[in-house]
Length: 192
Image (cartoon, rainbow, N blue to C red; front, side, top):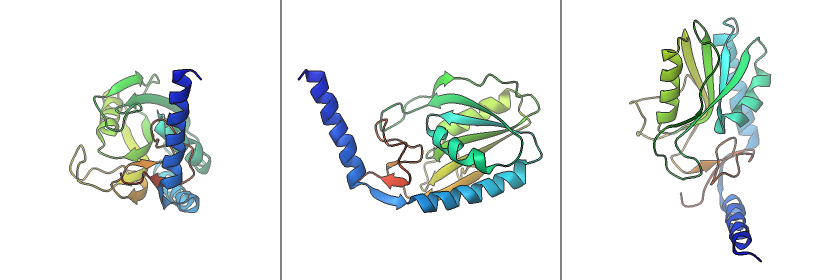
């Protein structure tokens, strides 16, 4: 076999092993219950505001796909792509890959993302949307990671589903080396 194919197979075996050995911190039923609670809170707050909902790629894609059908009111959906991680395990500087293109002036905006870890990416996105003229910008994340390293002391999303331990997480939009965003629960890499 060609060297690159062997490398890819070895990498894929490591990716599979990471899932097999991972600790499940929240199963699918727990995630569904959290999504139901989030949807009820979002509906109570935004049902009459004609919101524009941004899914943050790639992590927010899964959350958007699972929570939008639970929001039974008129809304517009769009996406943006800003990241600090790529396929790395630690972040560097913010990288805008797709900026918002809709007219935000006077709009209520909801930003959907998978996780609030340190919050630098989410904070930068919210500030950008406010700068572009949104009347209000609210954020929703499935996972709030429990630690004190937030971009701002005490930072939280306006809506969050689950508070989870400070570990390296994947599933429900969060990835491990680009994989396992599709895992149905919240998992922690063994030893991380």
